[in-house]
Amino acid sequence: MNRSDLERARSLSPISDLTLEGLARRRERKEAHRRMSTLIVVAVVASLAVGAVFAAREGTGSPMPSPATEPSVSNAVDEQVARRFLDAFGRFDAEQAMTYVAADADITGMDGFPDAGSKSLTMLTSFLEAFGWKQTITSCEVLKAALPTDTTVTCHFDWQGLRSDELDRGPFSDSEFVITVRGSKVVEASWYWNIQKFSVQVWDPFAAWVAKTYPEDVGVMYESGQTDFRLSPESIRLWERRSQEYVNEVLRTEGR
Image 1 (cartoon, rainbow, N blue to C red):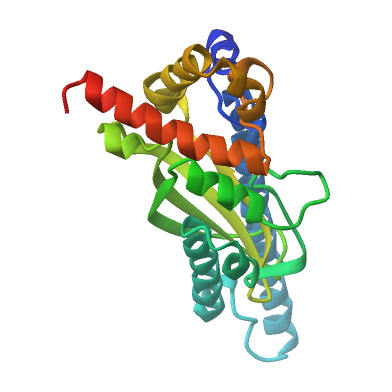
Image 2: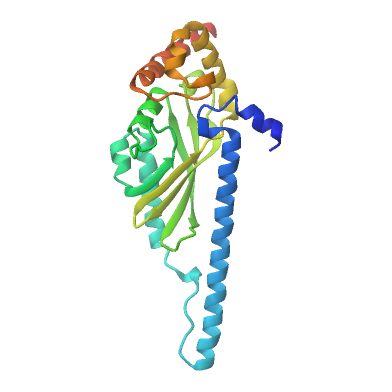
């Protein structure tokens, strides 16, 4: 990704932390996490191999099993926890989603929190429902986490926003949730949107329409520059109302 792409992304992203530059940094961190996980596994294998040699020399019995022989049952359970959390999130059932989350979890990576101390998804899921959000999990992958007590589950998803499906735009892909599970509870959650096509096809035209048709709503619905949404009860009401009006207007203009 070159610098011009990153500069352009700043004017396209619908969420302040979801500029492509921010996404790139997150992906770099995730790749670093994966590399660290691989190094940990290699180190464990090497350690066990050395232990096996000494055990064989000292006649202490059979060598310890390698990590490859670890049972996959716990991974399967952790994946189900992650999937159930995401299913409830996608249905805008914040209360149900939070039943899968540990009390000390860090879910600020989901973004959109009304205040820095929020530990609830209620405001965000309310906004997404008004926003016309739809998500489809396409696949999940269980990864070795940095800590032996954790399981990292990466789930790829397609999504629609601003009622884009009603306009025959999208779905938009190449996005993912990254969920860390420990003790059958979500302890960390983040998501990464690929927003380039969505911004050009839906976000930017809608923002221009709002600015022209309802200029008095801009300050309620958006943060500065119409690149970020604002979270508040009044903003959520306007996002639902104006997005539906916009869809009706586009469909009328297109003769549908």
